[in-house]
Amino acid sequence: RLVDDQGKEFNLLAAEKNNPTADICTVAGHRFSQFIDSELIAPLDTSRLKNWSTVNKVYSESDWSVVNGEKWGVPILSGAEVMGYNSEIVSKEEARSWDVMFGEKYKGQTALILQDMMSIVMLYLGYDGNMVAYLDDPAKAKSIVNEARDFLIKHKDKVRKYYDSGAEIQQMLINQDVVVCHAWSGSISKLIMDGFPAEMTIPKEGSYGFIYCYNIANNGPNTDNAYKFLDALLARPEIGANMTKASGYISTFKGSSKYLTDLERRTSSFTEEELAGLEFFRAEANKMKYSLVDPAVELIKAA
Image (spheres, rainbow, N blue to C red):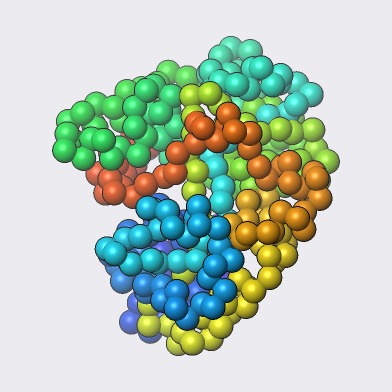
């Protein structure tokens, strides 16, 4: 089944938990804990994947990939929360800072994914948007979320739309309803590949990255075939390149970039300076974080 949201995927798997029909699902690394705690995905047995070494160790051996001493998925694509902009209207210098999203110049011509932007605003304000630093100080965590909430309410008049899907922001940029936005990198990368005058950047205040994985559904009907599929996927680096072409996200496969054109490589990579400001989403504080962020998001929408 095709879903466009991790929450919808979780609900589908949970509804079928006692009699699952899925063998493989796609879970972002920072959402692992939710699926693991609900027993919806199984630990990954890498010994059953003879091509496991195809995955770059930056992704296969990272801290986020291990929960409860086990690996839980095959990293396939890497993405980031970026600033996307129309390069014929917004200058590269303006796009160096998230400030441009909250100024008067492009008032009514910005868009963002509200829940994701809460983490970025916390980072922008000088805090840990993952909230791991505040696990032992819930009062501090609540104060920070309230500060981010109030900041976004204060600047709500700058935003044309809080949106949900990549296709939606692509269309708004094409129509020039929006000229600068917060977006997932794949959405903007695909626009650039298609010839639209767009650029994307990780602003100087920083942002967050995420990894999409293929995961084995717990108690799926065809687990042996699921492993065969994953191993076949890892067999050739050009498969990783094809996933980049289709999604706009960066392949985790070693050697995949040589199967991309110069334009495709440019649109699916960042400079060293940009990467220095990129942190990966982490899951340790998610329960506390989203118990605060979710109500804050609703208050911003209602304000």
